Image (cartoon, rainbow, N blue to C red; front, top):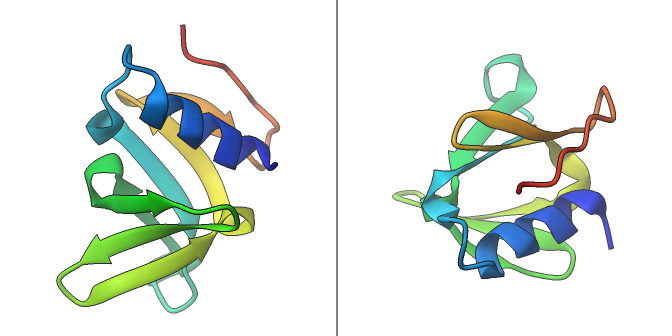
Length: 89
């Protein structure tokens, strides 16, 4: 299981965290700078291989390997480029 997937599952299932305060940054070809982000309130499903984002345009399936960073309450928890990984307390 990818670190990003494991961290998102923890934030989703652990009652100490509000998943609505999660922000996920990911590669989105065609978006400005090929980057996009979404909040936990827009993530409707954490599948084995991808997360599902709900928007007015429909569903988007984002594979975990395209996630570049995960933040909680604005604090960086995981960054793919630097390898930074801080589990929430």
